Length: 210
Image (cartoon, rainbow, N blue to C red; front, top):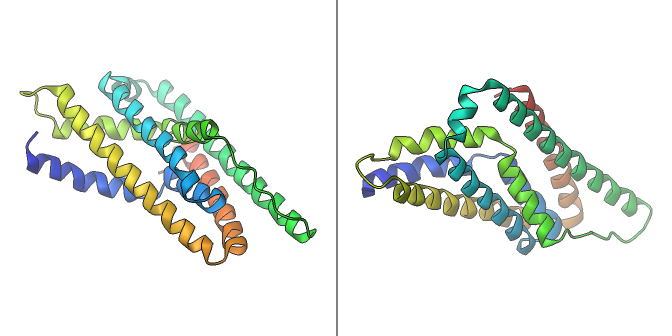
């Protein structure tokens, strides 16, 4: 792959990974609630999801979804419902913490296991069929059919995963910095906003609103 082609891909990919979405919300929520270190695992899960989507797109699943509206609709609704579930879960945790504070009880944050955090990050990536279609539409624009395709896909996929990991860690670090300046107040607000946005993204995804 030529350097100028790769750099062109990097510019587009950077814009894509910096755009706020469910993955960013996940990173911000985990960092705000459990700390920056605990956000690494779900972020790795999300990046793993990108690898799966890249492979699926390569195998033609993206083209199948584009051709079959029923497949796309089903996955879109399922993904939307999962994001709504995450939003409700975050909001319930925020309200429970608020009640404990009002009652004068010490707030105890139940930290999820690494396995559960990883799977959540993975599912956030896999629950958005639009990401699969985006990869399927974007990658071919930078492929040279006269050269080994799998090698080029490995470069593009690896680049996207590194950029995504870096962007999500940046958002997580920023969230941790803000929460650290007023942990109880800001953390509660972050949870409320994140929960509401998860639900909003879920509704938009399930209903097809862009």
